Image (cartoon, rainbow, N blue to C red; front, side, top):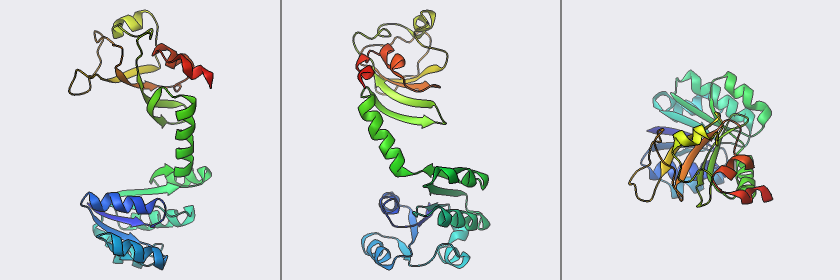
Length: 228
């Protein structure tokens, strides 16, 4: 892919590393000359020490043939302007970091893919790692829903039961779905069906419309989550 990355700061720099190592053709736009020089000396990519909020700079970066542009600066106003200009070049993939949650709706109005303040995401992830240690990984969807991974313990109420039995006993609400099962004896994740039996030590991928509250993690045998 041909990718334009705007900003070479705390977010942009790791992104440049990932994108170049993956073999993409990468162009970086960075206003700070020291950051621009550092990227140019370390990575195999074109670096423009310029202002990305001008159409001329994006044209010089090859926006007319870019597959994607990702704006990672620490200023939402800059990121919005970059995205608006990118639309004039009909770049298929336009993504931006959004630092202030109050600005999220603005980015949605111009139909830009976004990721909220990364520092806030990390803080939330760290808190959940302490508050709910049973959850291996999770992703929030909207305000309340979550997709998370959790391991079934030996004494879990769900252990040893088929999904049909789980439903008959009302162990899980209708808002909870077991999406996938990873089992040591299987080479690839299982797609659960009604007759699929949940075993102890299975790693489940679970969707919950109301999030992973303690009442839910109890079903998988993780009663300690109530302690926090």
